[in-house]
Each structure stands twice: as C-alpha cells, then as structure tokens.
Length: 307
Ligand code: NCD
Image (tube, rainbow, N blue to C red; front, side):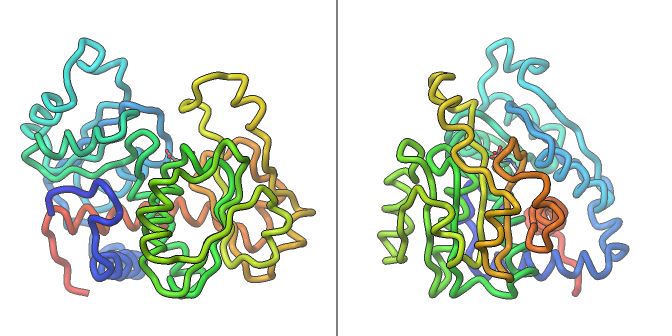
C-alpha cells in the first residue's frame, strides 16, 4: 500500500482487517515483536506533537523495527527552504516508511507523490488525521462493540479540527449513524465536510450550540480543543476557547453508557474531575492508537502475520 492520506483511502474491509490485527497484537504482542526487524520508520514532524509521533515510534519499536526522526521543522533543512517533495525523496533513501505531519493541507499528498516508500499522513493542517481516526475506531469498537446505529456528538472546534473531519468521514460509512454537531457559530463544521460526507450520504445531523441539551441523546461524545494555531487572530481565540467545558455536573445529563472521547491534547474542555468517570475513554484512545499504528505499519510494509 502506497499511502494513507485520508481515512477514506482504506475500505471498510481494510479497516476491519486493521482492527483485527490490532486485537491480535493486544492478545499476543510477542508474536509481533520481530515482525519489523531491520525495517526503519522515518517520522517527519513539521508541527508539534506528543502522542502521534511517540505513538508511531513506540509502535515501530514494539514491532522490532527502528526509528529515525526529524522532530521539528526548525532543526531540519525545511528551515533552509527545502521543499516537502525533496525531503520526501531524500528520506526514501534512508527509511522503509514515512509518517509525516505538516501545517499545510495537502503536504502529505505531495510527500507521497514524491517518495518511493509508503507515506502515512499524521495530520496535514486543518484537513485530515487518519491515524487518529484509526485510534478512535478501535476505541469505539472496543467500548461500544459496533460502528453502526450510533448517535455521535462532536463538540468544540469543528471548523479547524482535522480529527473531527476524519471521524465524520469514517463514521458516515456505517449504517444508522447520526451526528449532533455542537460548536459556536464561528466554528461550525466546514460545508465541504458536510457536503462530502453527511449530505452526500443522507446522514441525519443537527447543528447546535447547546452541549447540555445534546448530552442526553448521545452514545458517543467527541470533545475537541479550540485549535489556537489555526486562528487568524488571538482575540477570536480568547473569546472562543472556553466555549465548552465538560464537567462532572454536566456528565450527570449523559446516558450511563455514553463514552467520552477526545483526541488530546486537552486544554480545559474536559475538567480533570471527569477522568475518573468510567465513561471517560480518552486515555484508552491513546493506547488504542499505538496498536492501530502497529497494524497499519505492518499492512503498508506488506508484512503478513498469521492470526
Ligand atoms: C490532534 C491533532 O494533532 O490534530 N492531536 C492528536 O494528534 N492527537 C488534536 C489536536 O491537536 O487538537
């Protein structure tokens, strides 16, 4: 497989195959400990990251492989003016697979077009974040046991949040799902995302500014932070940053079996007191992300392990 830029690059069958591989890894990690011996993953991160980069790196180490990395744009030749295309060609000489994050939408596609090794998009600007969605999908599967007939509330910065765009795309492919889009007026889900996924597939959705009202009807609440780095001015950010804060009090309005997800990092949109609630699933997402990245690396390197 050459590239994963968008979650839609994977068919529903391929997603299920990755979920099954991830579950097999969880059940028997030793079986996978040498599957990537002598293989190298290059992590190219032109934007800040804690989880995604470390998750890819931990995933590769747990498969027995090695990691070479460019941890910041400032310390790489990008600072000298090198293009993404040239960086991708160069790194293809050193590694077997690339995971790349970049502030510009479309950068991962440019890298994939120029690299001679597989490229995974680890976030391109406000566009897509397919491997976060894989973490989200494994979490939904393990916690809810299905991908269909779910009411999914997404709350916060739906305009700039790339994890939301990818999740809406992914969950729109399963039958019976509906969305409640909770955001301030200024941070509504972009119309291209609505058009491409919700309207095109006649998925029921409502848009609201009211989290409390939405809570009782949700199976999943996906919280997100306001994406400060994508704002044009600080004033707007400061005005909108605390639009939603999920507290223990508000959780009383939510169904007993709803789960709370968040791609992290959290700023203050979920109060720390909610972490002890059995419905809080956001740290499980972190761990699930590593297993799904292990499964994806194996798939993209064409390494088959009998289940
Ligand atoms: C997300 C991202 O980078 O888009 N973080 C992550 O990878 N888990 C979410 C965010 O930064 O808000």
